[in-house]
Image (cartoon, rainbow, N blue to C red; front, side):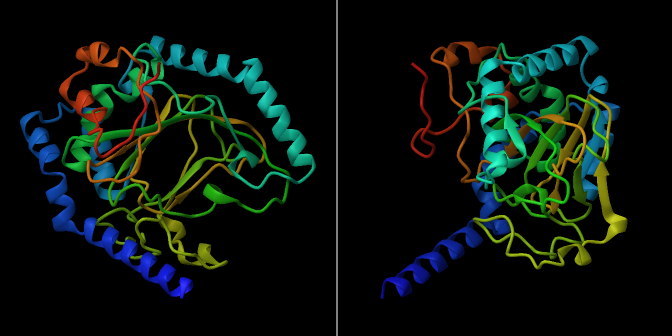
Length: 322
């Protein structure tokens, strides 16, 4: 009886999410965001327009930070990340990870990822990565692609490290679709040079919403991907794969509801920052905390950024740092 009830519950959950992300309901839930987008249209530069067009057509757009920000700002971001990588707490966590790996006890993303922030980060507007994530340069591209004001959901500052030779691909190293929304954008910033041996992000073009490969292992809300066969690579057309090697400062705008993978590092560390943006309809929780003075400090934000970090406390449970 318990098994039957469990199956019924799961079926109802799947039906609910399927209905919520159907085109009509999804657009209705995002009506305010679409109206605001029409009132405050993006001010795209030539490079911003090119990245947006690529994102719309293929699901991915690639540029360099120098096209949007001064070089001094990128230097500030790099310095911050490198300091975190050398922080004693991070070094200690990395040491524990090495010890666990030697004992074959690590069965999670910690197998190949080191977080440079522990726990949920604080949305500090003085932090250069917060300023990067909430900049109008990014929102103009993201909102133009989504056709609405977006919500900022999460950020990650991580080092992807080499794994033992011959190790099987694990978790996000395998092809998958992200579950946060039917259409979404992740922005990846390489903080060091990323070659083939540093686990470059890899994407299947045209697998985003509206693309010709959308039907290939389609999303099954609320999870991103259905179970995939062991020979999944046989179904992924090589001519449409984008392997995103790039110099430090490379920015990748990508709809990760499309098929992608990355982080299989064989030689060099990959230091990367990730920002996550969805529509208002997404049920994915925010993954950062607000400082106690955020209401006052957020007055400097423009309408796009202010909307992105405003959440209904009745719908989203977030904690205020004391």
